[in-house]
Length: 473
Image (cartoon, rainbow, N blue to C red; front, top):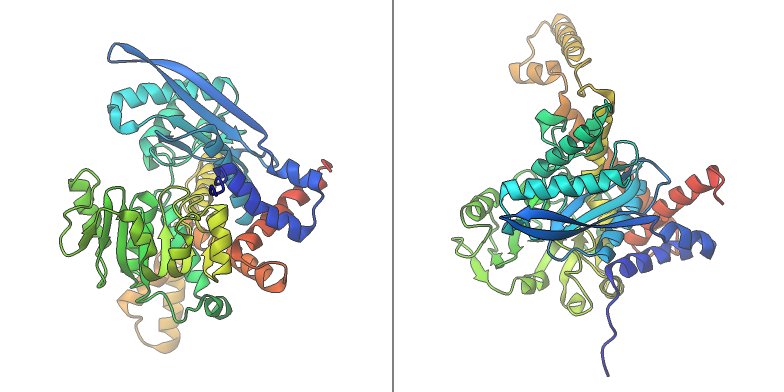
């Protein structure tokens, strides 16, 4: 008998969120409205590349406008299609609601392999794509704000911003049309690392909840926990580096596009990344590790925590039964399919869902957007004032005790928070509070069996309440 055809990415997301609708007993019409993608733009545009006209196809999906602007990255990849863009836009809607970021959900994609083009060619393509989005109402500081994603980064965001500025020179808030920009062009410190750092903050909060750890068969803290990470791109690199250097976890396997590295004693993530930078992004040949060409097989290694941090649909019905971990933390969007999620739940494997775990990027994008609209960097007005108050505290302590405060302690008390301190503080607070709400929802409702459903229950409750307040229903 032929095996059942797997669900598409967007259908997989919808089936997962259907569990939340069932728990909340929401009217089917309301549920269908919340799930529906509000608008999808497909554009085809020509660009002259090396004397030849190439036609490129791109999409921008707006899933929800219950909050404005709609927010979501733009990815450049050779496998982008409309279904993927719609699914990612839906995830952004739920993600923003879960972490209380007042945005709707959106996502964009360009069908292109950026490795096949020079910097100048990519700039031409990006600027033309931007013009298409702006002219059709799918990019502005007030309605739709992109960010980096797979295949894009600060450079592409700077090109997008500059193109928008020239199309709308009267808009004094033009820097807010996109986030993830270079710091010297309106970006914010801490944005590049934000998604990976958010993953780490999510894991740290999980390990502060003994009951949740116990249900996952884990104890203690992150120190010495054996971790397998799939994808050492921007998200995976920062998450793995922090876990290894600050939390003393053991990264025992790294999976990349050309295979996997295994070392039971753990890796120095920085050394692996340096090696990749010197070898065209490949890990093969890295010393002091066992290399395997079959990278996906490493997903099935025995470990405490598995972190898929690359692309969607890497854990499917085909390998879900073989996964040997206690906790999966979804650093990527949609790494576990609906069918695999059902299998893993039945096996008792705990999953911190993507809609929560990788929300660090959009959280810090929110901070950047606010910074752009306010036209002032965080900490500028209060930093020196805080330093003066700190010196008064030091003087009071020394006056009362008759002893000098140690230099290291004085430096900590006196130092005022700069922008990076405030960004990290805000991200940590956001991830902690969101986890606490998810955990409370899961543990207080017998109908909710897993963290993903709990997260979607929170998101759907907030979105439906928003619509009810404005009289949509």
